[in-house]
Length: 283
Image (cartoon, rainbow, N blue to C red; front, side):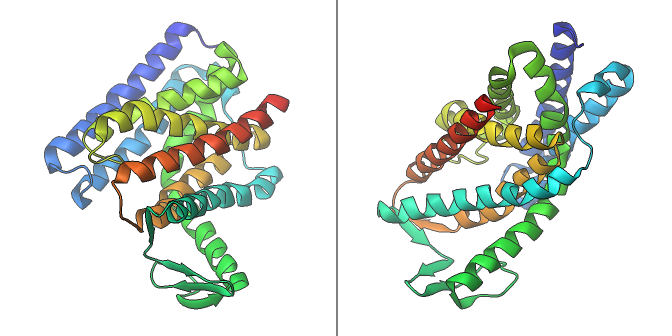
């Protein structure tokens, strides 16, 4: 069993190292959204796992909290880990277009199919029937989610693979997962205040939108982890958010300030988080 002091020491170490790396990304490049900042951000994503491994070596009893082993259940759940973030992106796009806030630079929808004008889609671009389009999105989403999930595992081994279990032990399942979402949000604080994710809306993004989004996502990622006893599906879902979801959303051409899209994205993620909160509550 972990003590409160041990958890505080663990969390403080994760934050200290991660924040230092984020601050270096900001100060050495001058632009946290630049290509030069990406190696620093990749190192930041890896930091939680390295800290976790260090503490696991020092406290061997902590290994009982780890949820990491591959198993058959993962294969049943991993498709959902890709589909939910992808559907989230399209729901956000549909709402943006429905409200007249903007349109996609990639997709033109008709009753018979979709005209894809750009993007790294593995089955190509151009006019596609709905079935071909759905298969194209699914295949592309799976491949890029797995690739990006390998990087996201640097976070998820720590967040869902270890820290979630310890917080659940101290605060209960639902409160522990919600608290992890808030901690996860604050872990991003230096780069978000520097304009990462919420450029032009750093304060409201860092202290309102990001916590809501991360708590909502935490219930989804938490459900994936508890359903499989492994952090691997959460890493794939995280990879899907960073690849297929972000790609679709970032290629929306807006006719209104970006804050409108931020609020829509937050509302959709909170709604999905609520659905998985209810599923977790029934477990």
